[in-house]
Picture 1 (spheres, rainbow over the protein chains, first blue to last red):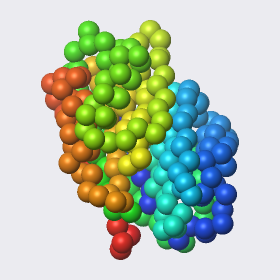
Picture 2: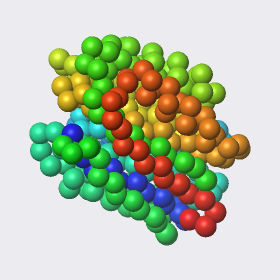
Picture 3: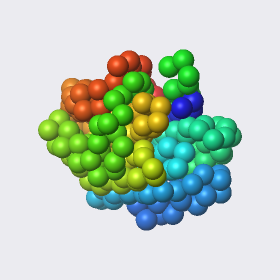
Picture 4: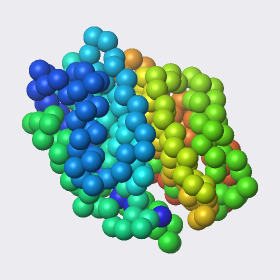
Length: 121
Length: 121
């Protein structure tokens, strides 16, 4: 089950962005970006922290998206993990990741990309 | 938002384990292990693939658990990500990870641990 896992840490995200603070807005942005990237949603769960901040995941036929926001610190972590069971989904994962980055507009980012699985473990 | 993300790839998991093939069993095992580790569930979503295989996530107050199974390949990927906002949750993350490993009984594993966030980015 060869796959790729993209991990982002985004700093300096603008505090007023609704997708940064409210679960409903972030959920809508995640579902839209997932569908536009050509990935397949099979479930989702988003939780609103009070007074602000969101944690959420979108289950994909290809694996998952997970996102956590800390508006008081301008900070977000994002994970996009796709397996390449029937086709190469790496470009779709990258498209989803970049679409969410455009929504949340970090001023500084850290990025890891990890290859997972594969025939040789 | 200092935190730790544990990533596992588990090979050679026994094919007959209900938690490996059925969403309901894996969901119950994940929720039990999360609570026993002292982490706080704020949401969850599990999806059953047919004829077998499961993808699921548990949203935590501390971040998330994500798990994907491919019974036809004896393969599982697991992610446990916790932030240490109000306290150090690293030991709880490790406990959750190890509890699920005991349920799914891989014969061979790969493991990454990634430090995320932190004051210096």
